[in-house]
Image (cartoon, rainbow, N blue to C red; front, side, top):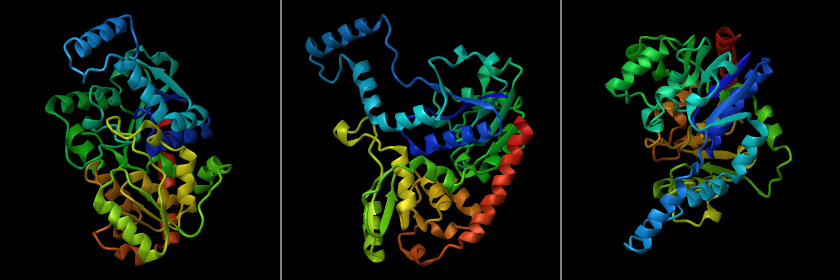
Length: 371
């Protein structure tokens, strides 16, 4: 079967890239042809671009508004290419991608099925201008299978407008199967879309630790001694203080594999290039302990059976972290401004038994609605 995956844009987010890699890998192992349709993130230059440049140049130099950048398109494209130079290599090597500028230009007849997921594909604030695309509006007239695998609302609160709710409710009626990444998503689908959904694992958890180890088998580590890997998406003093305190208490050397990829950051671009995906994966393998405020940081701590502490990240949505911890009975790993979680051992044999059972359920869902 020819399958297209629709997810969040593939850029420099480690978790976002790996969830797509994992879903593609699973489907390919099932014998399908798979491609991810991904928006072209670079600003397309047109015949109008010279006119825009001239206009901005006049505003900048004659009207003395120095905040207007005459060659904005070039600078933005150049900055993006540098930020994602490492992650881009991983995507090019391991993920089959079909780029598009306008989603309606996609040849729907090239595919037998479309899968939406995972990541926060159903969260309005992360899909401005393309929310209905994530409900496959562009396939409305096509005779194809439509499946949501581990689609995420990112929060247990309903963030859709009335208009968005009504439109997406109509679109989701055509889905052959619906699964969500958070337990709260099951209730949201039932309450607002009148559709039944099941709760499944994030795609990254469908692969094993050994699958990921193959990706960094040639990556050399320069780190010595016992290590604390911290993966913090939104750095704050309270979080860095927590990491320092934990490292001292446990006698570990703290390190991270992450960069500030905020497009508005004032840091030099050379200091903001996202490290390779392989280095990030190896950090979990090498770590003796992990501290994170990230959903996928939590996921890979579990996959690599590393003791960990989670700092809830309300800014990005804590519902998804609450949900994954609940599955594995690891609610006690949440940081509550004390280091109590560090002394609580994790019964990994029980965690791994749950993981294997949830994997079987996920594979059964995919087989039922795709094969």
